[in-house]
Image (cartoon, helix red, strand yellow):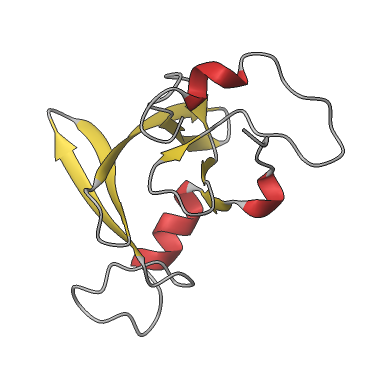
Length: 125
């Protein structure tokens, strides 16, 4: 398998989801990404745990859990990667894929990170 690079992937951040759902001119019920119309977001709250339901190209929605951390300057939201269960600010969608994970990706000029394989286990691994 050829190693994927960040440059080739769609990047998901909490800010991107907020911008997509709170953009000016958004119609009620239009929960698509502001750039990629094949990606849709919905918020979900169950027992005081917040998640985003991310749907790519009509596939089954993926529940991406959110964790909010108090900092000295306010709060910061993180995703929990379902592949390795790590707290991440960015999750990636591989080209042609439909699952967001951290994938422990690197840029083209960096050295491969150890442990990348553990996050690739699953439907896209």
